[in-house]
Image 1 (cartoon, rainbow, N blue to C red):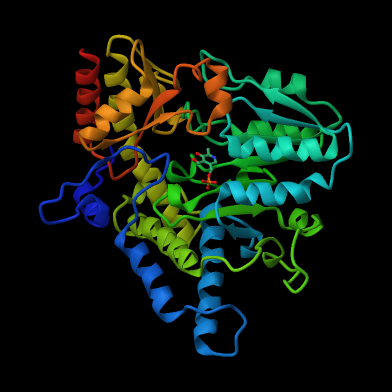
Image 2 (image 1 turned 30 degrees about the vertical axis):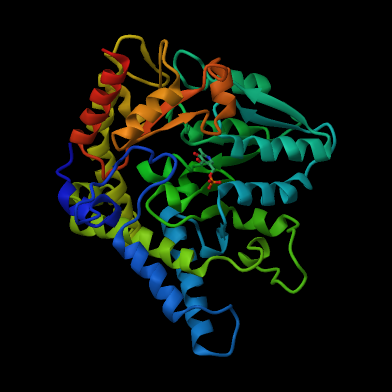
Length: 425
Ligand SMILES: Cc1ncc(COP(=O)(O)O)c(C=O)c1O
């Protein structure tokens, strides 16, 4: 376990120490959304007080707003290792961004062309492509994941790829099984036949380093509110492709990047929060992570190097907690964890852990935990395909317990004990 100073981390999140007589809930719904450090809150408030204007005005407040918007693009370019902040499109959330750009991407394709989506994905990386296929007469193929290993088999991908395949859309990490996918290999196979690759990194982003240049994909999306930031979404696209696409935009809006895909007036306070979120990671990387972590990233410098170090450092803290959570759940009678459980394979998954318990409805378990101040999610979590693929839709889906680096081993134990108590184990 990394020597993370967990008290220092937790002290930065006001929601974790509400003060007075109040006790903070045990936040284990992190895959649904994370809590926010004070620095992010301050940056958002500061923007609303000092930089609250539309862009392009001939006055100070507008100039400050513009600076905040520009800084957020630079920060996200650092986070994803984009070649330029021009490749960063900021929007309301991942779903809206994907629906939006799918209309432009669809115009590249002709009737009878094929696309591949998967049975592992959140619906935000399935439905937009189904709608695009409907609008353009495309053939949709589903890449299934293996129900025992919870992974894709690349020979199955190869069997689906043809010279008419134009797009492969899949997730970096699943919001149901937690599996981390081998993005680079999928990209290699898809690019070999000339298909574009759209990667959903929403679940992966809080738990690892994203490097779009190394992954080699064409588009990648994530949502800052899943990694301690405000409710927004971010899309990275290869600059040449973003310029080639025909944007759905209003006429007065600039046709340059990133403006051509950033429709309307966005949340500038959210953008201020995004920059502070990236700086939150970088500060941990600079001040807390051992030199070992920074030395892995000497090919980067400044904020990028520090935030990469932080993400690895925080992941090393999370892994033993995930192992304990999965071990504790798996030991309970009738409980099945739907995801990778091998204690030595925790690097192949994020700490998003879904389970069912024989004879117990997921909702009942979530309600029982909620009464004890332990917050987990239940149902399909919009992971409609995976829950159907595992035959769990009719029985209420799963209970999902998801960790973040501000959680403690005590919280994990508390959750497992509460579940055991509810099950009468
Ligand atoms: C894997 C995954 N993709 C996409 C989404 C949708 O993200 P957003 O709420 O930003 O639209 C989620 C949200 O839970 C998710 O977990």
